[in-house]
Length: 463
Length: 62
Image (cartoon, rainbow over all chains, first blue to last red; front, side, top):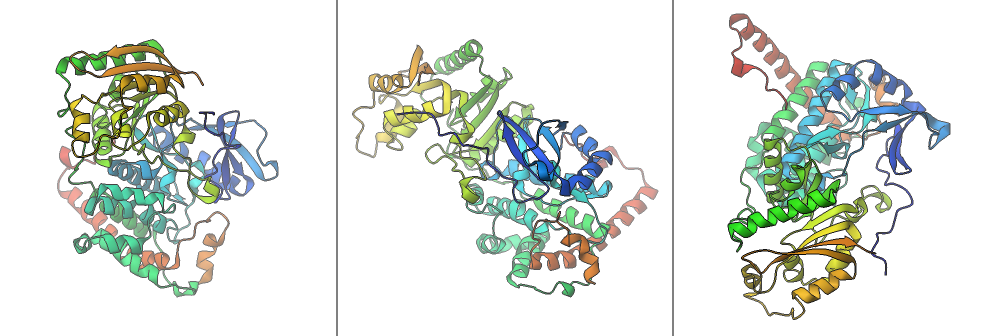
């Protein structure tokens, strides 16, 4: 039995829809081929000063041109190598503020582009990634020369990818961001307006861009010559202003999270809590991983121990409210090594899109150098009936090093979980836990937490 | 009339703007554009009469 994920023969191909070029991977490095059809636009983009300004302001991923053999020589103009993104994330894994920041970034880029007589030709939320704690635009081939009078083609895409999910999360529930997973080209506007409360119509910008927009989409217009008016530059800027005003009003108001009181509601003593942090710090100093995944990151309390050491840490939590708080806190303290994401380990992000090959699954984006599974195992084993050997197997699939905490049955948190249900977990005890994990990991150290029955184990994958 | 949109029929505009979205945008943009122009003039006019105080400066992006 192998614990390693099946390797794909090629990287996912999210860029095949745009004839301007595509991404490919060679020897583990990501490149972008620019096709001949886009040569003129690309050279103009590089020469007109727009690229320089966007890169200078950290709005666009920097790249350099490389002399390697093209992936498809017959249609190739140039090959560029963009700066590496340490962890690819997707809009359905972002909290509202991450999507909102990505939306504002897109509009800001469009506004700057117009100053250089260029314009975005697509507005996909998938064109944004997070780098050094901030959103950054990654599709260098999204720019084309602005033609006076032409409407903005990606207007619909912007509304579907950004406005629609933001409005649902603002007015209804933070968890509705996950609808993006089922709708790869953004949320259908008719569905969204059906779900929005009538009071959302009082926001004039939302009324125009979502409610009226959904109505307009219901009619199919086949005659292009019905269009008699041009969209002037000031009209274009007015549209961008209005979209920006709409986005800015969609900050999540109340963040109800199941986990916000988590650290106040444990049965740790302050000594045990401080000791747990010390243990983690000493492990990180000893192993020195480049990347850490903090599973069940909550608001990032333990992730910070890694990021304070300039270790890039992806924090994952099923609760978008917790991730929202984690993201805001990280922005506040200027933490450029932390990326909190909404990922549910019980049902991790699948691969989606055409041929299941456009967007990667959670597991495909690993393995991590180190995984932190602190105060997590009891939620998986008791809360979700997952057998310990299956948990160990899964963790071995996604990491080389594991820092895992065992929370025994005597612990008040586990007792609470078992209060209203049958205890069907006779094997849930530390010896069975260690046995399960020893199948995949060499247990290097065990740290009992003082004034607690919990313990932390450090393991290195053997399979 | 069709000639106005030749640029959209080029290969680079690979995205389907959606016919309804396309028409709505043209209508909205004309209204929003007028407001945008009015706002620009208003700001210019205000600028003539008083200097912007510090809190009126555009917010800096971090």
